[in-house]
Image (cartoon, rainbow, N blue to C red):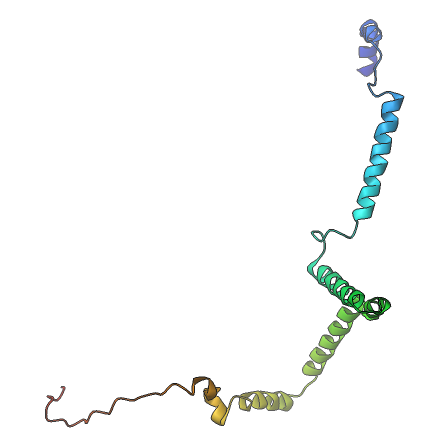
Length: 162
């Protein structure tokens, strides 16, 4: 099909003008320079934007920057860098916490029924007791509660209810 079309329409195809690219050599150089400048600007801004960071990374970065700022306010500027360098990596802390949670889960799984019952009993008895049951009464020490006198059940003035 393609070969037949080329043979049949060869005169028409050859009569068409050559393709022209409107970008001259100088224009090509200018666009290339502009692209490199834009790439440099983007490379400089890397790490400044927070909209693509996860919440955890953004908070960690804010904490490090806060430590650096407090370190720079002091007379010795190197101290802020030392405190920022002392921070453990976020992934390491997360791994440690995950490992601790797994160990607790294993310990709970390996626990006997008696131990579970004893823990439940401790939690049940851990509630508020005695004077603390009503909370901190010092907050309301100025308030006085007045109770109305109780009415007698066998009052002659009121008819009995049936």
